[in-house]
Length: 341
Ligand SMILES: Nc1nc2c(ncn2[C@@H]2O[C@H](COP(=O)(O)OP(=O)(O)OP(=O)(O)O)[C@@H](O)[C@H]2O)c(=O)[nH]1
Image 1: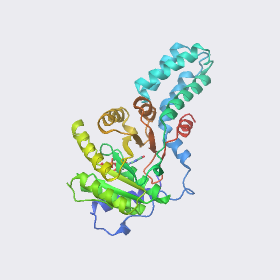
Image 2: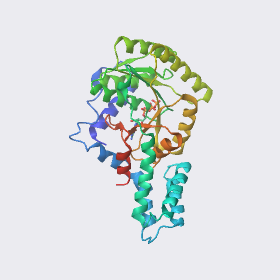
Image 3: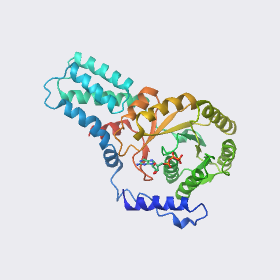
Image 4: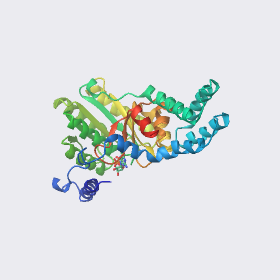
């Protein structure tokens, strides 16, 4: 990690520990530096995915080493690798069935052909559900962000705010996670950095009231994008459903057609746990897209495939680091190229 990045995060933590009254100078300068001094995103993606690459492609290479011929046993062993690389049981079985067909058609002459076929099949599944968010499709475009604690929800909102503000969009943030004061404070710090206003109330306030004010403010200030941070907790499914219903009702009443996106943030490093969260949140909260964080340093990047194929949820963004420019639109071609480098 770059020193300047550490500088920002210790600054941010220091500011949080010291309470909200500290002067703004305590926040260190931009996190990631310019693109000129950092490797390009594809390089960072490749580096970030290196453990997943080892866990998946590395093990496939070992399996294929010295194999003269691909047969049913090879595919059986491959299935086990796919499952343990967090691609998910259903998707792994589906991939193997397709490869079996290709084997029967004599399309898998050797290891290279098998790898190529697997890459094509994974890409086809990712592309089927890929759909980058077009925030210009409505004004203001409203994103409600949900996800359990610690998955990188606030960081993701901060990165999005920064990115869209930099591209000239008028962005507004709403701190509707009113359960913890720290959540709103953290959001404000990201807001300050991005030069974006944050609508917040006191700790313990009704999240819907924050949402109501934020919608009014977004309309009055002619915002292009309103991002709402919610507690989105999963105490019980009923609780979450009720909270989300209320928020959606308020948003929809104030801004017809909104929310345009209910974005679920998942921590890729939690593997199967993230898969369970996707299932539960999809049932309870009408999730329309996913941001997968912490792909860097995780061996469980296969869940990108599981999430989109099993739950038919578009992966909108991927996070490959703590830096402000470490969150990007998910691009299947680029992802698969980085994985099968
Ligand atoms: N390595 C890495 N770290 C990340 C990424 N995204 C977020 N983080 C880190 O994950 C930690 C948790 O992020 P938060 O944004 O505070 O998570 P949250 O979901 O808002 O959590 P609460 O505030 O507790 O609800 C922070 O230390 C972030 O810097 C990522 O893509 N890669």
